Image (cartoon, rainbow, N blue to C red; front, side, top):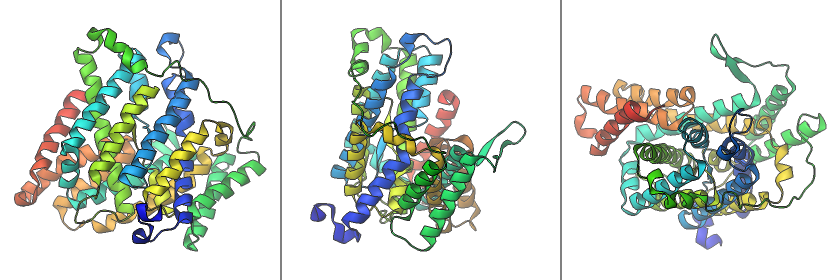
Amino acid sequence: MKKYFDFKGHGTTYRREIIGGLTTFLSMAYILAVNPSMLSLQGIEGVPDDMKMDMNAVFVATALAAFVGTFIMGVFAKYPIALAPGMGLNAFFAFSVVLTMGIPWQTALTGVLFSGIIFVILTISGVREYIINAIPMEMKMAVSAGIGFFITFVGLQGAGIITSDEATLVSLGTIHDPGVLLAAFGLLVTVILMAKKVPGAIFFGMIITAVTGLIFNQVPVPDGLISAAPSMEPTFGAAFEAFSDPAQLFNTQFLIVVLTFLFVDFFDTAGTLVGVASQANFIKDNKLPRAGRALMSDALATISGSIFGTSTTTSYVESTAGVAAGARTGFASVVTALLFLSAIFFSPLLVTFTSEVTAPALIVVGALMASNLSKIPFNQFEIAVPAFLTVFIMPLSYSIATGIAVGFIFYPVTMIMAGRRKEIHPMMYGLFLIFILYFIFMSE
């Protein structure tokens, strides 16, 4: 096992990989509760039952999609990157496709299936890997730093430290709120452990925070340890039902759905791969080794997830938490995958790791990823502007893909105006046009 994952070459151990895999799982375990709620349109009044997906079935589908995708990523691509149904993509699936467009959720799953198949074709042809390798190093670092700011914002928001405000959009939350105090305590503990260079500091920070929350009744007490796995019958294989009615597939509306799934997943995955890889120092000569395998893992995860009955499965930025905790090989992903599989039977325990508990991990990881800003030559205006916009737009738009789009539109413009046309890879012109078209025709 050590030889297969090259523990010696990566300077890692079983302990570090297991702690890294656990940390990644705990940082993204919220998806097991959020995704079923999102796809079932829970809390939305006046929605017919036939538009809602079965919540229990989606829970199992979410866990299985995460297991399959993360396991393939670990064994095939050998990266410590975990996958699960993506946030943002599930919102588009539920609220835009099903609720607004009125497309049956079964047909929406077919759209996810189609996007996964197209991804496999693009990956085999090498197009996806070619595009990622064509992105200049400065912009890759901007993407990585932007993701850091994004997940920090997610952590602050989830903990209630940052809240919405009608006048200023965002503001400081109620600092006397017990949940905010718990998150602040967890952040302090995690920072102290990190500063003292304690191995697995982020993971142990979450454990200490969770235990503290239980003591002060700020974290739900699990009802038990084990529960029976719910049935997948309501959603399993529903993606194939639309094939009986070709009219649902051969129309402009369905094409837009597929293209949107393609676009968002493509660049969310590209951004996440770059972010995690740069955090772990995997990028060599501005290229990501085994990028084709990583992208294939993502494509196969999307296909399997659609068959199980969930929205697009994609790589998770929370994987950076595991990397920060010590994960360096695919063995960590195998650990994370097995935890997702076991979560089907141990779901009561997951209520303990609330957003207040996981927020400190996201905030600290964001700070670590922000260090990539030092690798960007901000004294060169033509690079500073697109890099800055990439970083700034991600958290403000609440979208990794949108931040990438804005930055990549400005990059060729500023470089050409600065007389550095020859340094622009031809693919960057193609991405420039694609992102312009996206904002014109597909942006919601």
